[in-house]
Length: 207
Image 1 (cartoon, helix red, strand yellow):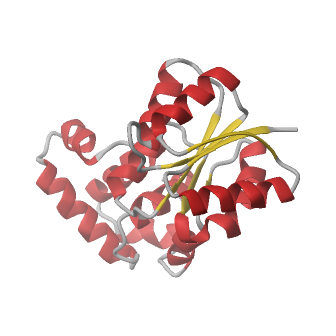
Image 2: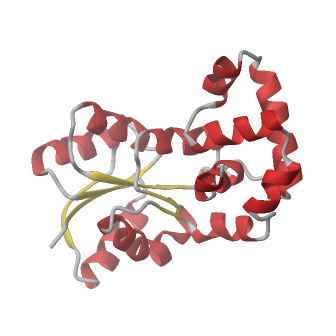
């Protein structure tokens, strides 16, 4: 039975997730209402899975994921969040986070997310992917993107931040932001913060 630690500074959501997963037969071995307590539990209990709110007092979910990576802790991280900021999403990808779930869908999707995680597959909220299904297919994208745009999206799929892409292509970050806007328009993606990154990661084998 896989062991799980859950941390969220909203007591109702924390209790709801804990009760739901317990009812589904999962082994909840610890809960916390702030990031430092959550990290201490991970170090002490070495759970298989940690389900973390991104924004918590004392330590964010991303900071915990970073500390786990630095200290070679094997706990697999799932982040739950109200945030749809692309920068946060990209940081999560670079830290090998296994799940990224929008908080309003947490109860609906957490079980599916854990099932993916147990097969070593990352999982993202269906709401994010549903926007991508309406977008241009990856084959069409290869034809309508310029060479530079293809380079940019390939680097996005490699989890590079806008700053890193700018440095690699020897251009300003403002130029990268323009490229991203053009790519979003060409692919007819929803102009939501994470849409381009998720699309790039889902279609990276095509580039």
